[in-house]
Image (tube, rainbow, N blue to C red; front, top):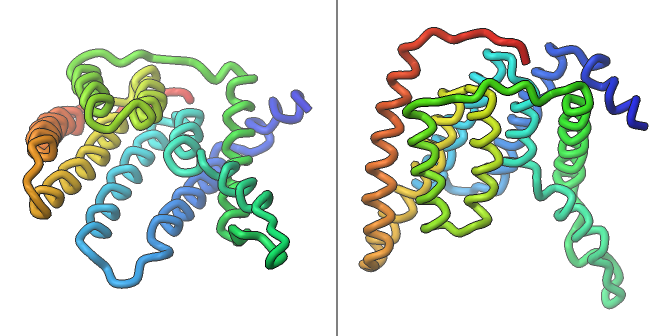
Length: 236
């Protein structure tokens, strides 16, 4: 079994891996917008966030960081797939007989994608996938400030999830991807906090809006600096 997993990275060539990751990313897009009826402002912001994540993912592919790409996809979009599947499977009731939480094709596809991504991550690790190229400079400072703000205002769970993703991206030295994911998350924070202020003034929402907007602008300026630098093609 271990040898089978180890061999996946070589059996599935890089071009096919990229195609499969793009398919997974498109399905994540479908998951986000499949239940939308009338398009609202929040849906537009959700779309913009996904565009930024798509751009971050594109830089991972361009710089051939396929191991990181698999991890980012799994953590950001498919980490809950096993929970959703097994919650449905074990929601059997007898009155009436059936599953209280329906088992849908979407749930099954999400789990299949999760399984593929998990196997590929293990395959990279078994083949010495952790070949880091640590990042230094302004990007690290932006990410560190962002994670502290995330912990204070959004709680520990969100902080941990983003720490895994951004920490790995920084270890592999991909500043553009890290900054794009930071911008994606901050865009959401700015929209939610400002929208909440229109519903009724709460000091916390004002603080979150001001801090998030200031950090968003700073991260954007650093991203512009990074975009002016040539892309360094490196081994995965």
